[in-house]
Image (cartoon, rainbow, N blue to C red; front, side, top):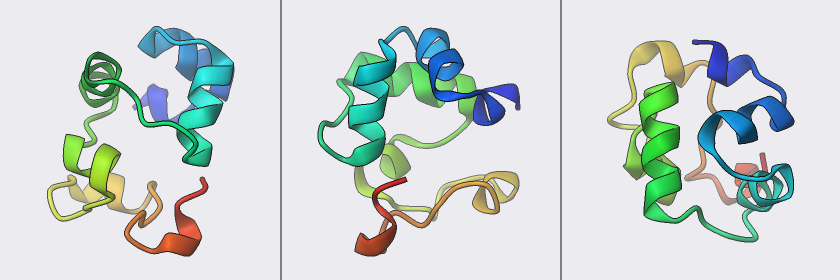
Length: 78
């Protein structure tokens, strides 16, 4: 899935947010609103549980290797 291999600017454009807004999500300074989270889910296959809670249990196996375990507080800042 190309979205997971995009740089921040490309991915931000793909999901319809600014690069600074995406950077705030990735740093854990803000959470994406529901519409943005749904765009992320639709373009990458991640679950809303992973986006908001860091819960990896519903992720497809192909994504488990690519995405950090956000339930570990030390890995929340991507």
